[in-house]
Amino acid sequence: VWTRDGHAERFREATGVDPDRTFADGDRLPTDPPLTVLVAPGHAPDHVVFRLAGDDRSDSADAATGDPRPALFVGDVAVAEGSVVVGAPDGDMREYLATLERLRDLDPPAARLYPGHGPAVDEPRATFESRRRDGPGDHRRRLRP
Image (cartoon, rainbow, N blue to C red; front, side, top):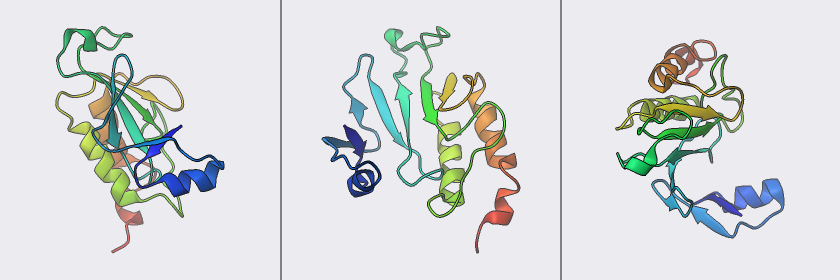
């Protein structure tokens, strides 16, 4: 059982399970093909995204599209339609907006998103930008000074 570095106690409290290992931003998980961890807080403080290969290697193509750009397994960061809950007490709108910007600006850009709910997303940059700009209500109104 793995959890994000710095969040083992939170994981233990939520699940009753002690994690065997932790991972941090940029770690490559020993999978085939490898997955790279991208810390993605906002929706939840311990949220992460997994990046499937990329790096312009010939074996890094998204199996569903054949595109050599990376695919992202985004969990609850973005969905094809609708909005994502960034709620109290653990959600943080500023961190969520920063996560959307980070993922939008990846180089090389993602070819496809696989959300935790709903269908795959074929236009990641546009999706991240629209969630950042027009997400659940007016984000800017929700930010505290």
